Length: 117
Image (cartoon, rainbow, N blue to C red; front, side, top):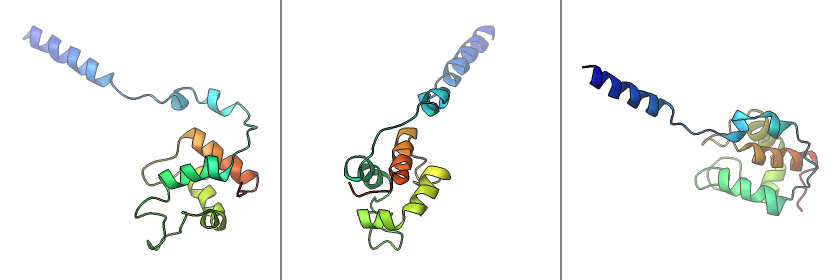
């Protein structure tokens, strides 16, 4: 009986210790206290985030009845909503918030005027 209890205890400890850590969640100060002075570009930095997380099949593309974010014009016309939902509230994309790095890129690109550069 004692042997079974020991095996169960070891298994419970091993299972409960298995989870995925995200560095930015464990050490948020190392990600938030570093000023970001980089220039972000729509084509190089923002469009891949949007096309990979927002303008996906059945979501923010033409013909879905939702805001179309598949083009620069669509993103620019809805930049306030993109900022609010993806950067401030962080309830978009529906699969879960963007990474802190992607949020930072969007935030800085928007702050710089959301240029088509």
